[in-house]
Image (cartoon, rainbow, N blue to C red; front, side, top):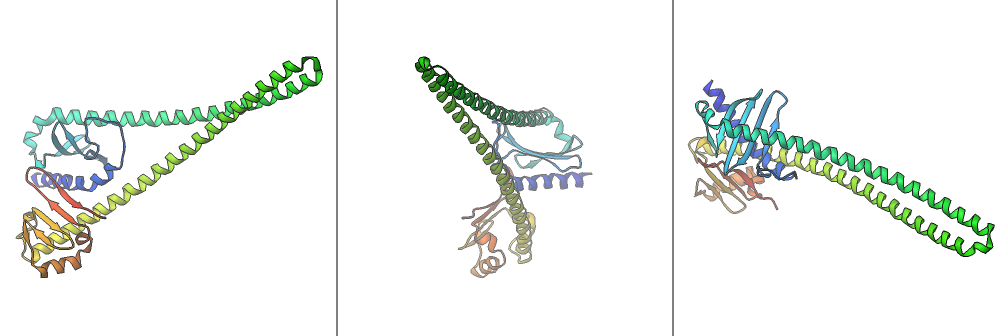
Amino acid sequence: MKTNYLRSALLLIAATALTTAANAQKPGKKTAFNSYKNYDTFDGKGRERIQTDWQGKTYQMELANNKLVALAVDGEIIPSTQWNEYSTVIAAIREQIRKDRIQAKKDQAQAKRDQEQAERDQRQAKVEQEDASRDQQQAKRDQEQASKDQVQAKRDQEQASRDQEQAKRDQEQASRDRVQAKHDQEQAHLDQIQAKKDQERAAEDQRLLKQMTGDLVADHIIPNEEALHELSFNGEELIVNGKKQPDSVFKKYSEKYPRFAQGNTSYENGKRQFNGLHIHRN
C-alpha cells in the first residue's frame, strides 16, 4: 500500500511539469489560484490530479473517486497519516475549482446569448431598412399626389433618407459583430492546437530527461537517478550538480541530446520546492 502511495505521489509531481506551459495559454476569471500554475484534470477513470498555489504554498494532490490518494505540499510528499491536517485547505481548493467550473459555464452561456442578440439586431436592421424603403415610396406618392404639399413631402423624404442611413449603419454593425465572433472562434481553435503542441513537447522533454539521467548514471557522472539535483545544458557547456563536465562528455551529450543543448536547458529538483525542467527556445 505504501509503495502504491509513493508511486502515485511521484506521478502527481511529474505530471505538473507537463501542464505549466499549457495552462499559461488559458485566460480566465481571476481567483485565489495562480493561473500559470493551477492544474486540474480528469483521466476519465475517476482519477483527478490538481496542482495550485494556495495561500503561499504549492499543493499537489491526486484523488480517486473523490478520495485522496496522494498529497504533496511545496514539493514534500505528505504521508497519509497527516492528510487530516490538510482536509480544510483541500476542501477549499476543490470548492474553488467547482466555482470556477460553474463560472466557465456561465461565461459560455453569456457568449451564446450575445450571439443570439447580434442575430436579433441583424433582423431588426433588416426590418428598419424595409420600413425606410416603404417610407421613401410613400414620400414619392405624396409628392406626386399634392404639389401644393411639396415642402412637407420634401421633409418626409429627408426623414426617410436618415432612416435609411441608420438602417445601413445598423446592418454594418451587425456584420462587424459576425466577423468578430468568427475571429474569436478561430483564435480559440488555434489556442487549443498550440496547447496540445506544448503538452506533447513537454512530454517529449520529460522522456528525454529520463533517458539522459539514465546515461549520466551509466557514465558514472551521478550514482543513481535520484542523485540528479541540478543540470544546466546549452551550446557551450554541460553542468551536472554544479560540476562542469569535460569537453568529451559535453560533446557526447550534445550530439545525443541536441534538443537540450540547443534549447538552453536547466533542471532543478529541490527538497523544498519542485522546480522541474525548463527549456528556453528562441
